[in-house]
Length: 95
Image (cartoon, rainbow, N blue to C red; front, side):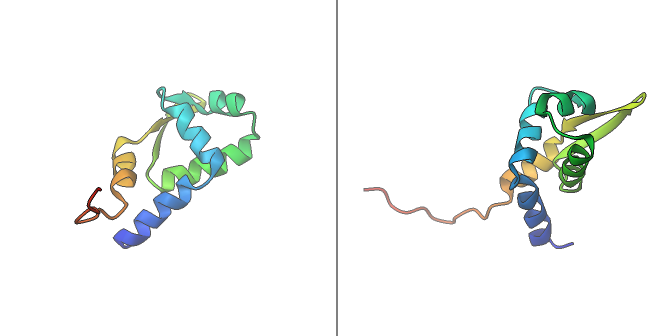
């Protein structure tokens, strides 16, 4: 996958309001999938779909804890997303 395709995948994952709500939940630290589901009041299969998209985009990481899965923000993926926009070489002059 090219760099541009990787960036597009990250932005596609970030373009959904529910996925942003999931990231907001994870901003306070790792969370069990059951807690995310309860907090957002969504069906487990829908949450699973969105978490998969966030994982594939490299924005979250998961770890099994017994019968539950715990999710956390992936700092490398978030840094990549922050840096994904092209940086201007020269800004407009301010008046």
